[in-house]
Image 1 (spheres, rainbow, N blue to C red):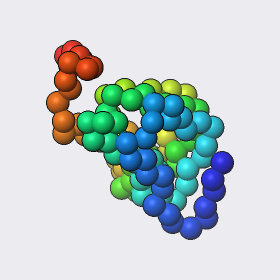
Image 2: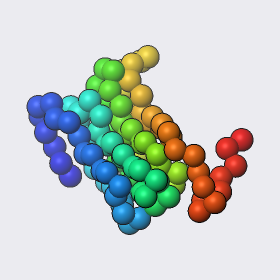
Image 3: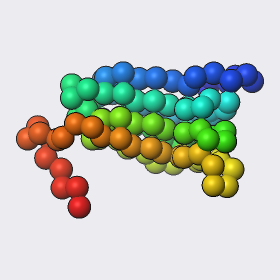
Image 4: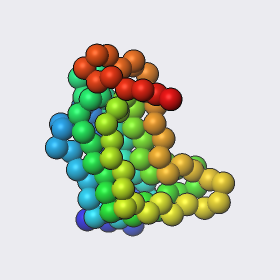
Length: 105
């Protein structure tokens, strides 16, 4: 557990490995609690975020994932004020290759 009573920038993972797991944490006072930023190298590696509590501030994001094709989110609780912020935001700017064929229906 990491707790901070003042504002901080959250956790940033760049091209993190396939055994990336964030579990049983509480996030407070971060504009973006977890940012996962990948190039095509890390896009196909599993990321697991489970059983966490995200206290998302006004206009904040609980989990921001960029170029992530394999993410497992389960058992998380996102506490947000109404009509403000995002629990999960996914932005994929690269196209999946034959390494990981996905039906995006």
